[in-house]
Length: 96
Image 1 (tube, helix red, strand yellow):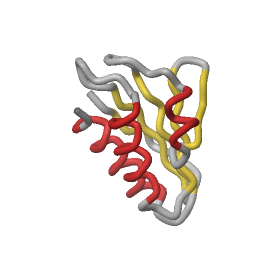
Image 2 (image 1 turned 120 degrees about the vertical axis):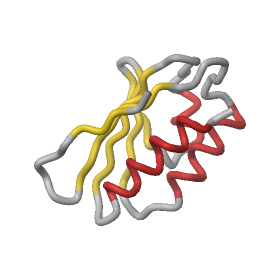
Image 3 (image 1 turned 60 degrees about the vertical axis):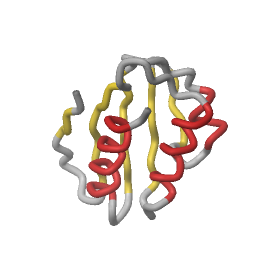
Image 4 (image 1 turned 90 degrees about the vertical axis):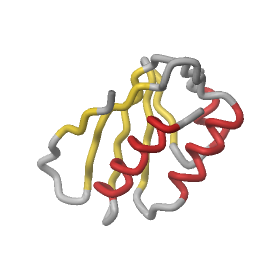
């Protein structure tokens, strides 16, 4: 499922999370994802394949075109980066 990676830089964090079976990152799930990201002060990026997006931008997240089973790369920088990445991993795991 999702795995965290240790980060040597203070104020930054990263992890990976896999979209659940049957869940594509289309309008409703993407909106849920973006709403969760907007709850943090940290800058949050999400990547899928060779694309990267601002996790707080619905259009950018939709443009990733992530399908069920896609591994997402989550990175955050800021005072609440670790909490943001942990929460975003959990949000991905519970998307429906």
